[in-house]
Image (cartoon, rainbow, N blue to C red; front, side, top):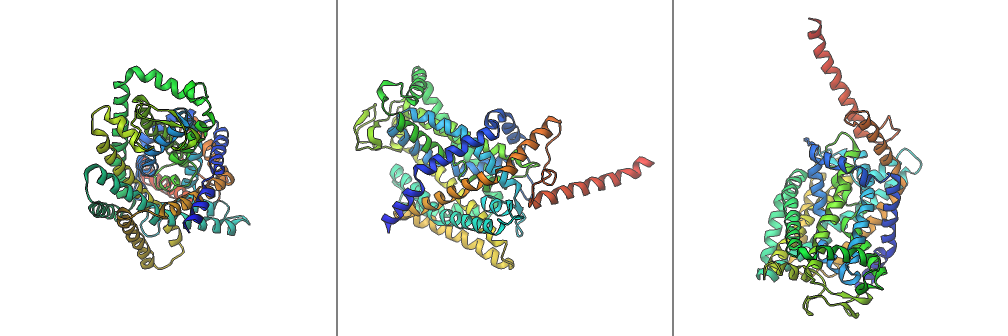
Length: 514
């Protein structure tokens, strides 16, 4: 069974998926006229000015939920692996993929806003790939097929994020804490499960509030230590950047012949880390309160930069500036060592590179800091997984008429997640790794193919936003004016705004006549 799962996992996460993500990024970059560069001011403005409501969280809170899922253990171990097998040049290609992926993220997250709806029980905004896959062609002959397509996506996402992947993250937290401080995994499991239960019971608002506090803190602290190390080794700064850029194009003699590996590992790490196009970001994007879908599209496009340009780069700078890494040929630790660095021979590829880099700042500091970073990164990732699972469960709950049955299913999901954390923290992941990766990999294929077909509404939103902004108005979304069908939430919102405006005029008119 394990052999079959490994084979299926290898097929799903093959270079074909990497090239699909890369191709989509290039296409959407051209289709949006390089919005990831020209619209950076809009991204920052929306983060600063975003508002919240009873139904929706702020743009910033939505971004933090998204980053909770994007920023994880892979930002530490994954970057180390890319450098070990692709050389420092892999970092450049990681940056390049982030730039392209930003446009893809805009498209999928704008679609999530266009086709979002209100939860019939909580009143909270719900949306994501399953919703926009179903709704975009609902009025056409393809409608029935797209419903099935959306159902398949939702099932794959629920299976991956409700049990398999949370358990794996919990296992990583428990192992890191035990290695650093000798705390038994059972105690870690109890604490994790208790804190997790308290947060997820509060719904998206509590998840958003927690993520808004923890994610900036954990990412900021990690980046801060990277900057400190970089400036402690300030004389290495030109050499670090020079090595990254030269190695990226095979011009660095020490890493000549690794150009292909640098590109492949940099591209893979960038795609897996920033998750652009993979269908994980749109769920949180739909939760935001905005006046125009493009606004949240900009915010989620910026999330790719934070994950890769800031956090992944922090890992790279810690490793390269302290010379705590090795580079292997044949993309394997068993291959010949191309570059030995200053790291001890017995340190395996992974978090150990970062630990030893941090130890150059303060001896013995590395293991504890990495344990804390992994604990925070992994725990917030579990929260993001729960939110994704709940949104996709709610997608099915729309067809269940009994409110008690709907709430029972949500509570069953919460119990399942807590159980998965306890089991995952205290046992070996086993086949859970493969099953979780298969689920998320399947959603990536389904979502990227879908947004290539469903892109038009997102591109219309971008054009409409730009036109309204040039006219000097705060962009307001009217799907009917743009010929976008099945965006019922926005049609109702427009009618509500018009009624409110008429009431305001009626109240003012008697006063004007006096």
